[in-house]
Image (cartoon, rainbow, N blue to C red; front, side, top):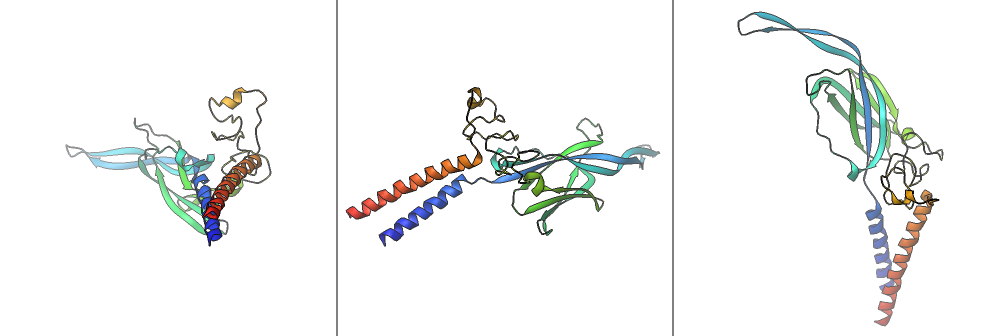
Length: 241
């Protein structure tokens, strides 16, 4: 009975440590939306004196959408942006799984007007998704026409042992070391991370930069030692009783 209790405590500690080390992740996507076709819209209005006026407005008819940035971040590091003005130009976003089943669908209506009244013909729109291993594709539609299709799984981790493109340590630890130059600052990295400002380790010559597997090994050793010490303490305590 005593040993069962000890095993239960050890398992609980392992689960607690795993939960503590785990971090929620998000996918931050930046899309460039550019006008490809435009025209003039005429609206008739009546002034205060009853005169009919024709007011002409620029009208956007079609767009092209391209990917400008894609990154997986810790959820706690995300800065909350104030929502912009909505417009009549609605884009449909679909997130698909590896089996092409629909995981999420929503609309965005970015405004092409600046606060000073200037009309832009291209804007950068940010989209944030909850990270999931099930996510495969992101598709963008305008007027039911597909404007962009992104293979998120391939872009975030192609598993070729080279840290390139939009890969980083959070999205692809098999390709990117914890200290890799991946536009992601890992302050807990055991070595110089060039993505961190004022990293003291980077000031040292010949700094050892461990591989991702080295970092995991160190964590496993520390956790194992802690569990062993607790287990020995409990065993000795029960023996004395």
